[in-house]
Amino acid sequence: MNRRKFFKSSAVAGISLPAIVASSCNTTEVKSAGLTPTEKVSDDFELNEITIDALQQKMQQGTHSSKLITEMYLQRIAAIDREGPALHAVIEINPEALAIAEAMDQERKAGKIRGPLHGIPVLIKDNIDTGDQMMTTAGSLAMEGNKAGKDAFIVAQLRAAGAVLLGKTNLSEWANFRSTRSSSGWSSRGGQTKNPCVLDRNPCGSSSGSGAAVAANLCAVAVGTETDGSVIAPASFCGVVGIKPTVGLCSRSGIIPISKTQDTAGPMTRTVRDAAILLGVLTGADPNDPVTQESTGKTHPDYTVFLNADALKGKTIGVEKRAMKGHEGVVDLYKAAIETLKQQGATIVEVELLNQYKDLGDAEFDVMLYEFKDGLNRYLSAANAKVKSLADVIAFNKNNADKAMPYFKQELLEMSESKGDISSKEYAEALKKSQSSRKIIDDMMGKLKLDAICGVSIGLPHPTDPVNGDANTGFYFCPPAAMAGYPHITVPMGKVHELPAGLSFIAGAYREPELLAMAYAYEQASKHREAPKFLKTL
Picture 1 (cartoon, rainbow, N blue to C red):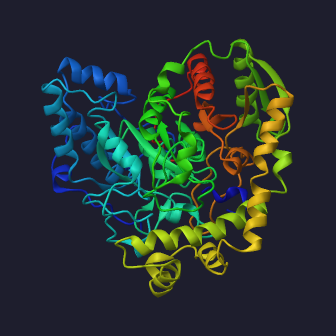
Picture 2 (cartoon, rainbow, N blue to C red):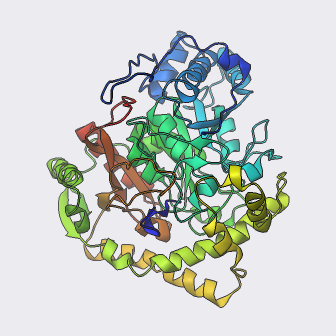
Picture 3 (cartoon, rainbow, N blue to C red):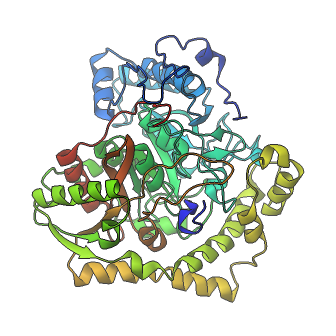
């Protein structure tokens, strides 16, 4: 969750890498020591900005194996995530990664290709269960040692597709549902993730590590999770593509929860096409997540078939009027993006969507407080963690405050624990009010005959401040789609002083094909994605 919509305020722990990585990081060096503020880091990594299709071509031609590609990413992580700029985007490496890659190579030699993710290294957020040697901790020291008995449904989907589980990414602890003034990207287990574009800037939360890892080319693609802004905001801050799918398109079973009504996993990639490929793998009905049954007949195994560079022609796009004011650099990017939409054949209609949500935030927050307690207690009761309830987590943090809470406390955990159960009248009323958000979007799109609504995803990355917490950037377009459970895609919109900003596309439930097509058309017309420069500061 991105706390910014609720709260305007808003020694780094080590990352354990296997000896095989530490002893082989000799092909890619990125050094940050002694940099002048605006000096660029030399970065000639062979796989920089490479796409899934290009990696498949290398494996098909025999110039690279999955094992070699995996080794290269492991070396990359050792060189710039643990050393050099020390991004701290990766919280744990999968000790079985090379073995998985080698198995995929053997299948390829035998003529078996599982699909576009066959042999492709993927990083996943550390709140997603893997039934292997890796832990699932949500970044919390209270969860250290928690090794899941089985894969989350989406992880099983990734394995079945031939993906190489490279490791897990750092995140804002408890998916940013811990404190009213947390520093996004910080966890007691993983430390502070940095923004690879400008290292003293924040990567945003809560899928901070996934966004930073993709931006810094530590993996081919990554998976994040979102409740409200946790895929979209870090994707925007780090200059990559992010998709928050319709709630129910991707299973949530095996994922440490915040809100059963808003949580979803989603792709974080460098291109819209790669996001479409990854989305197709993640979807599917799961008997352990009843909401996914609603997606039956509405999912697609291959979302790339909808990508069309001319998809904006004839479309009517609503553009959020509130984003026309604020930081002049962001406003200029937004206006330029709108002009690009027009040039690609779209009709533009100014709308005021965000104003209709100003009275719904408190209800959404109450829903989260109730559902977090209920969902986390359910998860912990069956997990292999030493804590078995939210109350246990709170007690652990208090007893280990010097390590677990050195900068900020746990007000949100305590507020959630103070709530009753989800059978309460207060919860029912809050849920009803929060979900009225669906009618707002549906009515606006129907009345104005809109194909999508666009806005500025979030403002520019702020300096990381663990003492005072996150700053208000002045822009935030995530709540409408988050509360409604509707799809949301962000695409790089450009930079202001090397700081990225994203353009958002939202629409009604299960409208991923149309949104992907329009986002792809905008991406192809604008081409704003750039590899990060690892600037020490501005």
